[in-house]
Length: 378
Image (cartoon, rainbow, N blue to C red; front, side, top):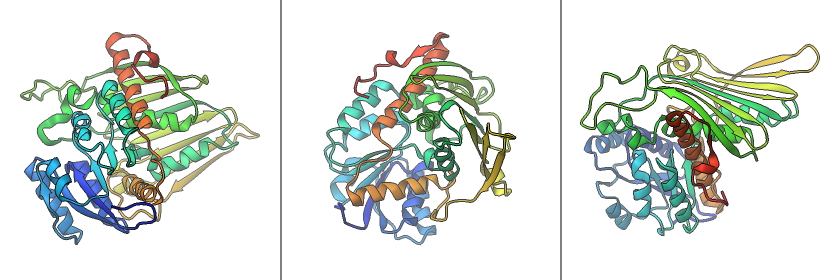
């Protein structure tokens, strides 16, 4: 098993659907990392992943339908868990105590209760436990976060994040059409943005959430064995922080015709920074990401920069290379024997903020984070 100072990292994968296959492509592109085995009960996903390996010039690897069998037979250093959200808690039970380094896709779990239970178990686990909140690794987002901490912006008082995008994609068994499986849109999708709010306001704790949202356009004519989809497709969420700062999320899942899919704004007492990230189609058409920095100084100067992708990205995937960059840091932490940069605590907070937003919508009131069953030492 790889440890501090060792080189090649041997990966196993639990769940190789759409996101799992992106992780496989990332690991294939990494220096000194290798795909050793994959596990998934769904045959077509196994076959698609085999095709990914063939296309990238890799040798075939063993494929399992049973996770325990893979863990017993294969010599692994790290495991990526990229299964449907509602399976994370139970799957992790088989991984605690193995000493393996774990990358767990977002959201950590579908409920705060399960997320807190995972946190307690992770504290006793010998390996790294890293949460796949990769949006913070998007190059434009990294530059935004860095700029937000500069004297030119000053103390940040307001954060606004907009995602205007396409509807949820089809997934195996249509699991992502139902809140019971996803945790709800504001957990499944928006855990990324609640994480970015906290990254933009380092040291501040979210204390209150007020939200309004609905299921108004998408999937209304779809009917499955489990019923009619109940996932939200639009929302506004306001989050108050204990230092007096506040943040806003503006989400639309029926806004394909947008020049930019994500837009982030931080306003401080000295200036303002914005990041604008194009969606996939606009990226293909040649629209670059942009960073805009403005000052409250004389003449209110504004500087706009078109951003290039990070040169170290060997596979861009569907997230501007963010998933690749998170694996670079994950592997570096394994080799150096360091702690995760994206922690289980980050995962718990992102789930709790999303769950509080759903409760606010359901009950029509502001919800305190202190109501969400979070441990005192979080």
